[in-house]
Image (cartoon, rainbow, N blue to C red; front, side, top):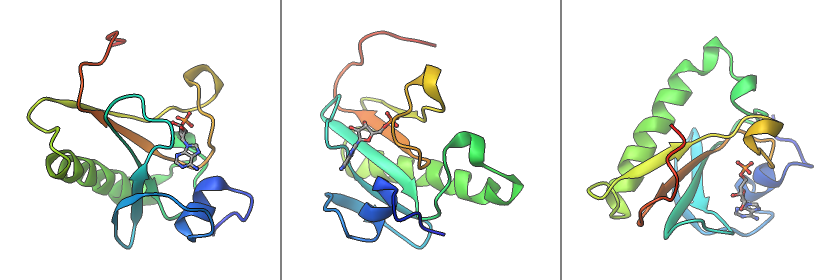
Amino acid sequence: MADPTCLFCRIIAREIPATLVYEDDLVVAFRDIAPQVPVHVLIVPREHLVGLDGLEEAHRTLVGHIALVAQRLARELGVAETGYRLVANCGPNAGQTVFHLHFHLLGGAPMAGKMV
Ligand code: AMP
């Protein structure tokens, strides 16, 4: 169920513009409005989930699908060889600002700082 107050639900519904790079029946991927590296794409499920913490057993396939979409986009966007990160911030300490589950696909330049 879409949330009409949710920014990413509104992007998915094409009510707010974004630069889409991929979509299928489960996810939409679009360029981050404030890219941190040359390739910064958000992979977002069509279903409104608040974040990683909103996942349930029924979403097992969705998460695997997102990982494979990330791999595909990394190849298509030319960062697979040089390397990339897939990051999902969950909650305040992680710095989550949009409360619709999304994964950041980051690549195209060395990333400063290695958290883990
Ligand atoms: P997070 O801080 O992990 O919740 O990530 C939210 C991301 O959404 C940030 O990297 C923002 O730059 C990005 N963002 C916010 N508004 C938009 C928008 N209208 N279009 C694309 N990306 C956006």
